Every structure is written in C-alpha cells, then in structure tokens.
Amino acid sequence: MSLFSMAFAGGGLILLGSWESLTSTSKTQRFSTITLISASFLSLLFIFDSLLSIFDSFSSHDKMGPTLQLQVLAISSLFLLFSILGIFNNFSKTLIFPYPLINLILLFAFIEEFLLFHLQFKDVDGVENRYYDLMMVPILVCVISTIVELKDSSFESIESIRAKGGVNFAKLGRGLGLILQGTWFVQMGFSFFSDLIANNCHLHRKSRGNFTIQCQSHMDLHRGGAIAVLLFNCHLALLVAVVCGVYSIVGKRFVVEGDYRSYRPIGGEMQTVENEGKFTLDSDSDEGGVNEIDQVDGNVGSRRGNGSVELVVNGHGVH
Image 1 (cartoon, rainbow, N blue to C red):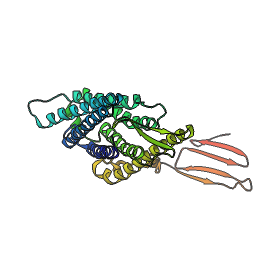
Image 2: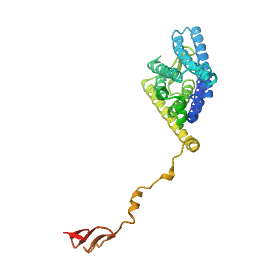
Image 3: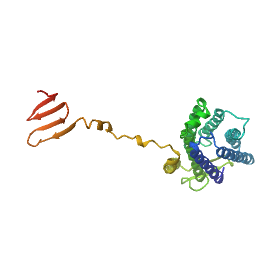
Image 4: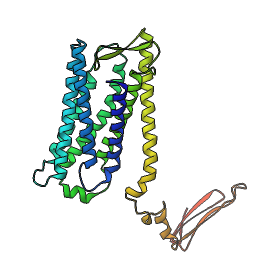
C-alpha cells in the first residue's frame, strides 16, 4: 500500500457510499447498477494491489507479507462476487439469483473485513493498530445495516418493498458507513505515508504490504493513539455536519412530508366547551376580601368569602 493507493481507495469508497445514501429512496432496484459496477471496479483494484504486494514481499524476502495480502484477496473476491451477481440480476432476464443470497455474500464480506482489522496486529506496539481499531466502527455499521436489510428481504417480496416506498434506512446506514470508511482510509494514507503522524513516530516498512509505525518512547505511543482518536472524532463530526446539510437540501424533495393540515394545537379539545360555560376569577387577596369563581350558565360553582368556603351544586349550597 502507498499514499496514492489508500487515497484512491478512500475516494472511491466515499463516492460509492454517497451514491448508496442518495439512492436509499429508490423503488426500482435493490442495488443500483452504478453501485455494483463501482464495487466491482474497486474490488479489482484491491486485488491488483494485493498481487503487487505479494510479488514485492517475495522480492523483499518478507514471509509475513503474502499471508497478510491473501486475506485482502479473499475479502476483495467476496465483494467482486457480490457485484457480479448483482449485475447479472439487473441485466439478465433468465439467470436471476435470489436477493437474500446476494445480500448474504455482502454480509460475509463485511464480516471478514471486520475480522481483518480486528486481528491484524503485525506489531503490538505499532500506532497503526489504533487506526485499525477505529476502522472497525464504520465496518460494524455496514454489518448491522446489511443484517437488517437481509432480514427484511427474507420475509418480504420485491413487490411489497417497492410498494411500501419511503427511505431504506438499512441502505442509508450502509452508505454512511462506506463514507466514513473512505474518509478514514484517506486519513490513514496521510498519517502512515507522510509527515502528518505524531512526533517521534516513524514508518518502518518490511515490504509493500507489511509495515509498522514505531515510536521512540511509551509516551509517544500514547500520544499517537490519542491523536488517532481525536482525528476519528473529527471525521465523525464532519460526516454528521455534511449529512445534516445534505438532508436539509434534498430532504424536502425525496422524503415524504407529513400531513400538517391535520395538526391540532395542544388543548384544542378544550375549545369545544367554550359555549357550555364561562369561567371568571375575581380576586382581592390584599385585603383578605372575596375570591370568587363563578361559572356562567353552568351547574357547578364555588364561592369563598372571609375565609369560608361554599360549594354550590345545582343551586344547593354545601358548607
């Protein structure tokens, strides 16, 4: 991997996630053709990059390099299989694969990607491990969204989902997770392969796909991890701000508006008794005078004079 490859992969994931989020209101297809073609293109690029890293590890006599890149090859192959089957469903009229099967392949790919970043500890003291831990957050969002979509697709037909309309929140969540993955890929590229990493921390490369970031002291290691967490929080805040801005622009067009004509103010049901009675309050509390509450044209009243209380019901007083 290099700065260019990670930045290019991150940009592709950002565009793919943005399109996936914008098409979450689509009623025509489960996965759009642009999404599937983009996913297949990115998968092929990851496979090509992994093959280059494997050949480089052989020339560098790095025994761990091919093992690490074989995991990336397996994940990229699953995403490529998912995209190919989805393209067949969109263009073929005879060979149609079940949508839950395609969604299940996508789920396995995300789970394997989650395990890759969870178990990839080439150097226990490397700062890159903190970046990999934070990468698991958007991947977990994609896993949960895909599980929700798989559950819905297993119990509902295509016609019922299309007729239902509205926003596919599982698809929207997966799109946002892909966007956050893309921005964090770009951040890792600039942090690992430039001088934007923490002070006293440097990149040590054994081969193209096997590298680590070591720090001089224990305090430098903790500072590098803290900077990674701070950067991830900034990425998450930026994503929230962008989503809120985009939603405010396109929400009125794509989101179904509520029926505000049926709005009734709080206490509106009390307006129906306006013609039944009128309440008046006369108070003279400074001189200990009469506080009087009357109901005009009503049957119930209350009078209090000089400390005595009188309850009037249907013209009869009770003391």
